[in-house]
Image (cartoon, rainbow, N blue to C red; front, side, top):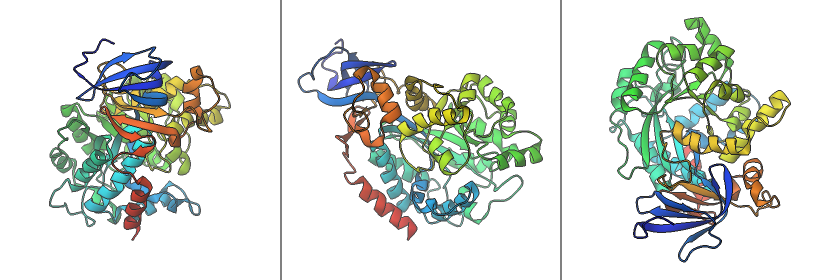
Length: 454
């Protein structure tokens, strides 16, 4: 290997590794003290002396491009009875109303640790829970965002904090009681508060912006959020056309679709990611693709809420890069999100093979990291950040296929339970299926969720 041995602090030996879409046996990854891959050696038949062995298929770390950490407290409770997205939302508001910076830190720390166990090395947190329960700012106006930053640090994963502008309950309507703590009043006030956020010194946090939705940010305020992101060259995310009711209300208020309204006010573009994009017109698809606006699909949430199947294949053909998110955390499993995108499209079209396993895995890794502002991770190459995860090939789900089919076995059969190792910034965060700093993740989740429901 070509790396200067004096720079190498750790060598990881992968039994199999996914390199540029190909499964390679016996791969050595030399990692530097600052958490970068120095060299990738192939054809290494056994672990070099002192190397950390990774048994299974090692892939780039998974990127969860859309998360609402506090929604994890809804798992199970919202599965009783019937309803729609709108009835689910009322239960969500009740949970949101109970959180404090302290309880949010405990919950997010456990949720991010669960993500690490699932092989996720970076999360995009769509953060709109800003103020105290009555809408008044905390003494530290960014106490809730700070809790999320601290939680990600303790859980050992990268975070892109997408500070979200949320100002109204609908077109021309003031925030409702449960939404008061989401709102800064104006986009200018949002920008002033968000501008006081600071990333951490060790380089594992990035800051971005989000427009909650066209119904929650008046059209006259959209440009302020877009400009804030443009000035910082930061990621900009937005919930888009998640519900037909949103489209109908937008047409009534503005005479156009939500996508057209966003484009008119400078929100679309290569650094923008539209989340869900479930109910698009053909014109919307062409608009997003033509502007290289990304689309983040969240299939497990979209099916859990009965939202519908989004036109993922059509937006990809139009030119939109795709990423994946676990959103409401009905489950936290990016492998399930990846295969669900293909399987949902099969159900919709009654045909197979819209994406290869490699294309789905790329959406869950490299393209997800780019959507979150981390272009220097998502591939196992020299010079990239040393973020990777190892999935077992000998579990009841993955055993059997030939090694050359490991990508297909992982994408179409493995689950989060098959993740054996997660490495972030060159450091083992999950080793042999156990989190190294949060050893009892189920217990931490149970305690944090119980506190929220008290």
